[in-house]
Image (cartoon, rainbow, N blue to C red):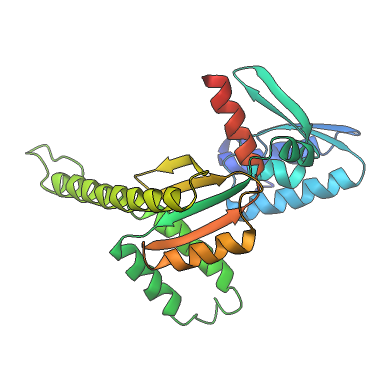
Length: 259
């Protein structure tokens, strides 16, 4: 559909796809700058699949990106840069092993409204188009829960101040207070039961917190049992348990460099 159109009329995402297509003409080394920025999710995964095939075919790819998932999917070697300084360089597995910080437990708290929405959606039978794609539906729900706490604010009318804005602000403030109370209770309980753990990230406005448990302190089976027992008691909407990820390594370097 874009064959007979001027490039100046292309959307940013389509221009990005065209630049990638031009880059594939390189015989041995492709240089790409933020190759999937501004591209929709479906096209992004398709581009990754194509680039991965090109790499496995023998051509080298040099790319810059802020997308850490893109790094893990495409890259064999990674360099982390901050303000023009190269902080480290190596393979993903080497960096993860060298800077292994232990087990990360990432938790999303749920207000009563969050939990009601979650139960309502998970109990809803899938339609014909959704059959066989429950995982995709749940992912969409998680994304919705992260976004739906930012309701649109009505613009201020020229004739006076909109009355909807204070209500929206108060609602957001009350929601944030609810999240802060839930996070504080969880943090107290978690650090009481695991005094060697630390909080690596905390986002009160989203009700999310990440705990880091040093390696060798607890078995994986034990932490899963522990979190399952806490879910209903402390209004945990969902959680994940993982090894040190590349994102954890990246954030550690950036924080240390900015101190």
